[in-house]
Length: 502
Image 1 (cartoon, helix red, strand yellow):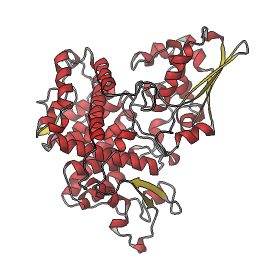
Image 2 (cartoon, one colour):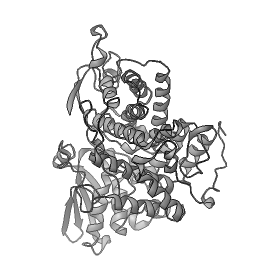
Image 3 (tube, one colour):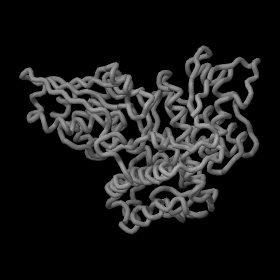
Image 4 (cartoon, helix red, strand yellow):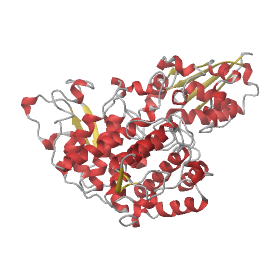
């Protein structure tokens, strides 16, 4: 790896292309790196993971809206929409929109946390859609996805968007653009311009994850993917971009992030080095914000120790800065304590999540979020006894540079009415690579089977799993086999409201 210093340069210094972060990203995207075997296998795992959650969310409102918008843009040689027959094709940017929304809706796919947050699996829908429309093969897709993960993970390590209340999709636009550049084997200059355009058009605020969180949380990464595709298309036609987008006098760093006095250090692999960043990412066993994963597991463990939950006086969760201020009481969002809050809000409330997991001793992607479940009197009472506190120890673990020392858990202190105190802590989720039950191919397939059971046929399940595990050998048009068709009875639920497109 090499560490790239990124800072603002005055226009008169005329910073050379080769010294700009966007150019160095483009060099990585356009190199001829050898494939790492473990990385390739993880690409397959994450395609399975994305398919699981996309199919499970097929008839949820945001997914239906996105799909209907996409269906208004048919294209003979276009890309497929998750859940529909592969003969149905739409413009790839609209397929990316529909599929990206389906993948994100349940907050149930992979994550990477460092200086900022990310869901690197959000790269896959856009890159796959372009691959299908352009007739790419399995190896092309693998290269594209590995680049997308490599760029996003390393941007997340080096540049914090959250402290400036900028949404993390600002790292997704450039990573998707770079991934598409690798997929299509574009030259370095075209990718360079694409990365800059994609960043310029995908900057938005974190209000999408604050207060009463709406369905835009599901749409946001899909929108970034769509905009990145359009950026690449323009740059392939010879168009340019605002430049230098990171280092310029009026650039993202200068006026959106920390300003002219700040230096960022972004790690990137050396040119032609194998791309392995995907191996640093981790998926979810539970459908909730990643920083709640370990605490759900801890709640299940504590349930066995506490016989009568009504005797609890108070629960304190000591955890990292990010967990406390994003999904904890440190966010100061009253909605996070509201039984009438949206699902999108509840899955960003560790107080709610911990209360339900402690009561039920389990977590379910649908049942744990129903209005009836959120309004249960015992749950509300327990929920309102929970508070979070930042503990510097956990913040330090959260930001550890060594992946083996990085932790996303916390310590839970339960104070009983009789004066007894019960405490337990957990470093990482059970499903994390360093956890009690790390996810392997078997667990990814089990998750797929559980989430798609009754929605797709057994034959369709077996066909998809066979196809995706042969990814390296798939020829042109073979990538259409990565689409999954749901059973007919699930296609009948159509929203009555109409928009501009349809």
